[in-house]
Length: 261
Image (cartoon, rainbow, N blue to C red; front, side, top):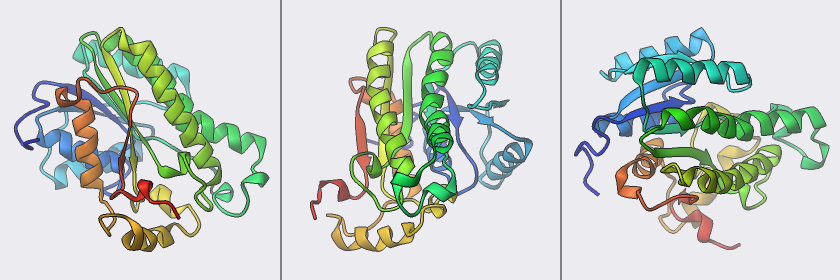
């Protein structure tokens, strides 16, 4: 793969989930921008919009547009993609990098998760992908790709990841079912399962920093990955280079997922 060759030239991509410079979604945004994508950023609150605009300015990047979208509100999702259709006509990709859980559930025993907190994690982290895919289908009239972000906690028990691990498992399963539903419309759906990245969300997981040391010791590459590597892998899945890939979970974790004990 040759980077910087405009593999996304002329493609409109909606990026959901940029919070700050450490966000995985921001790593994706940088990779896509390098490849010529025209990026539309969603935001939930005004402070998020201000943060995104500041990041773009600091990195000498231009945005194709911004649109407000609260993924917990179906009406907001519908309004956002109605606006996107009117403003841009067609889009070719979606970056879904959204997840949330009550911090109290990211420590101690999973057994203690409360019903409302369980449903909250599923709603924001999983159903949001389904709702966004449904709303975006009509706007992706030329086909394209949707890529979401997962983690190894979907496949294995990761201490203190708890309710988010279950949510990520549901997310990965949703990727497969959405791939089947949307494939006939020329839309591919995939996930990137990244190694631990020092995001705001990661800070909420008790003992998460210990994982960095374990991966450095045990992963085949003997190191952790960064947001740029995750960004490049996500770009690949969004691009025509991955035109034959759908329903896949691509691990970008220095190979850690293949290791046993």
